Image 1 (cartoon, rainbow, N blue to C red):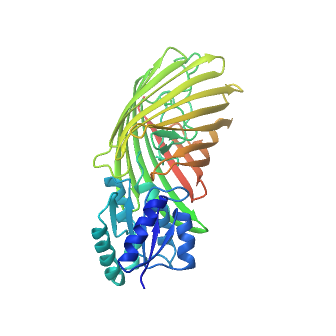
Image 2 (cartoon, rainbow, N blue to C red):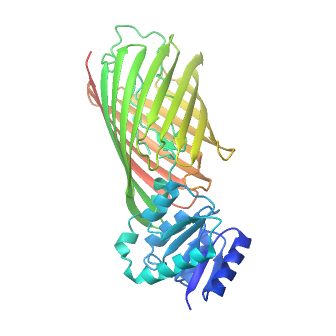
Image 3 (cartoon, rainbow, N blue to C red):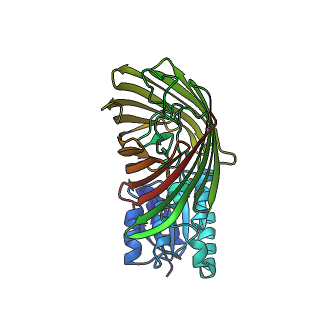
Length: 434
């Protein structure tokens, strides 16, 4: 007899589906979430899966990714029957090789027809086409922001208009920039004299190229899957204004987005400044369709600076708003700084708030080298299930000459035990004009 595994945290629906499919002549079993379902599959392999997407412990997408990474389970047809239904969800499910994605409430007759069609087509399925995405794909394909990025590690190279040092990029997670980043405010000098010998300040055009390659792994199975390339151009018409244009090309397992940002940074007095940015992603698959970003920072005491970074973005499943206040302490003649941030994320449509934190230390042991390291814990909501992501990262920047700076960075994200993401980033900054 054909065996169907039903995966849903709703016990009543689980029972109703079992009765309906039993009456249609199928043998059924149930599981309350994706983690339990995987154990059940490995114990007694079913012929087909009917699953909810939004579940605790392991979501439907994450369960499907695990199945595709396991040769013993990769050919089992999967049908999504979910209370969450968006165009991005459908696209992600199809990219992972799901047979269908249907919204609740559903028609039992149509569900049975879909099941019969899937079982008839199972023998025709090519394993290679099912593995169009590997573990971690859904997390990127379903991502709402441009994150985290989400998020989204370091994938962009923010340029401070004073540019007294070249910073590593930021991590994009839903509506938040993490970790170790602050609003794009420069580390203002007390008296930026015209004779300042910092070569970066004397160039009014700056171009940067950043490339990030990530690898997702679970249960010892590493797979490549995540790539980002960003080009940044900065023009400094004066010591108090910087205009930035950024283009980022991102690949997420068969899905591609081109993210655009225009930003203006400005300086107010000697110890304060801010920025305003506009973002857009034409035909967005997993990044924000459009958004507004703003930040401000100012010195409140010798060596102490307070800042705030805010972002609003329209995504496939609704608007997101974030606010991240930061405090930075600088010591040892500005060669060592510590930054801490408190992360707030609001899912406006759902009326829910999530929080997290980030910490970063940056040092300049010798004149031409800057070392950065940090850690963050932040809420990830990319697959409709909220979980805590723990991120650790480090970077080394070398001012190779007056015109060129090179940054290499390494980061690791732990998605609450579901999987790990490891990223390596290389950024090159070119300074010209004067």
